[in-house]
View 1 (cartoon, helix red, strand yellow):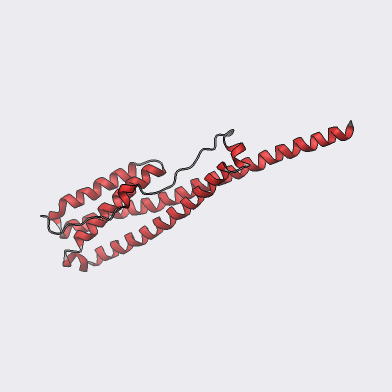
View 2: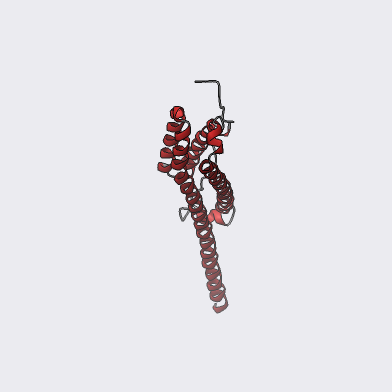
Length: 187
């Protein structure tokens, strides 16, 4: 009887250890996702801070492009208010599209293209866009790993019981994947 009791205790200890290790692995993966999402936020805030300066610079040289400038400001306001990976991704893609139109409009003004302040802001924006792309890729890679952990055994046995839900990717929706159309012929 003593051997059976020892075997039972060992099995219970192993089961508890397995549950704890699996749970802790899921917590670590979820925390890594949260950290990666925070890094995206840092880069998005950097971009949001650059936009007013860029709009002001363009406004000085291309004041009659007010509709484009207003669209960028509106898109920035929507992007700063968005919450959650999917909403932020959609809002940021709209902001990227409006920034693309702003840069395209700016290309039509030789004085603006030659403006050192505009060139510097455009360079900072391009650098920030690269950082955002890297941060999004890093986040999405972590989301993939986390989602696999909660769907595969043994994680799936623990995830549902402890409230680990599927994470959202930071991805563009289909409408945002289309190329931005820029028309220089319209008034």
